[in-house]
Structure formats: C-alpha cells, structure tokens
Image (cartoon, rainbow, N blue to C red; front, side, top):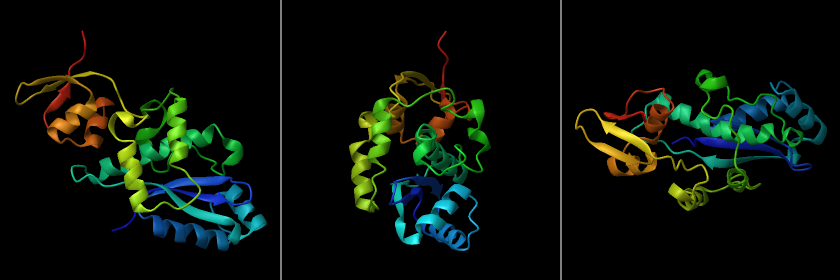
Length: 215
C-alpha cells in the first residue's frame, strides 16, 4: 500500500523547508528530486537553494502519516489530507523566513479557498503549534512512531480536538444526542471526514445524523 501523508524537504544547512502532501509519498519524492536534478522544479526558491547547497544537504522526511478510513469516499479522504496539509501551511505562513513554499493553500483544493476553508479567519493556539512542531521532527518517522503519536494525541489529548457540544438528531430513528462530534463518532462508528463535512456545511447529514441549530 502507498504511504499517504505530509512530507518536508529540509535544508540541513539552515533548516529551511518545503512542505507538501501526497497520496504516494515515495513517488512524490522521486518527482521532486527528478525535477530538482534537471533544474526544472516548479518552486524557484527550493530550486535555487538546491543548486547552491547541493543534493547531499537536503533531507526528505515524512512528518505525518495519514491513514484511510474505510467509511470515507476517495473525495472525503483527499479533502481530509488537504485539511491536514493546510494546518502545516498555516504554520509555514507565519514562518516564511524558514520556508521555501510560495503558496500557502494546498494545490487542487477549491473547497479550501477563502471563506470555504474551515480555518478561514482563525489562528492556531500555542498548544496546536507545539503539537505540529512535535510532529515535524527532523528525522524520518517510522509507522510505529506515527502510531504512537496518533494514540498520544487522540481524542481530548489532541490540541485540535473540537470540544464544542452539538445538538445531533437522527432523521431515521428520531434519536437526539447532545455531545461532541468525537463522542458521536465513537458511539455510532461514524466517519470523521463525513462528520467534519457536515459540521462545516458541505454535507447536510452523515448516516442519518444531522445538526439541529440552537434557537
């Protein structure tokens, strides 16, 4: 199975980096290095640094593996990848002096632009920034390490945890639940991607569950 996740190309001399996402990280690295070696890379800042410092002074690392949820469609999975990448690009945007990226929204991401981006107008808390930096250590992380991090920062331990209490209603069974999205997801085995899309207004419901507006 192809490795999916967020990667960085890091300059070992000054720690500047380029960050991106891919559904096939190995192939994506081959694409980057092929273009850089031919002096044809789409990012002129990274290409200039590569030419100046040389290939041996760059590391390619995976900073976060993303695992497929069997309940997600391909589109939902891709959107979730782009949302996670956006978190890293938000960090990069506030640290442009150490980043090679020239764009700070993921490529091929119309649903994430402007006000349609769930993060539009918001800012990361210091705890979230610390978490993202923790996930971005300068060494390639094994699948086991990433699994440990996933457990360590799961649920309420995750600084990105949404503690909002929603009024959920099941259209079919007429049940009500007044709880967080995480509680509903765990109780009824729902897709986190579908729930996120419902909460942000992309979907009206998820497996017959919808949100009732407070009056």
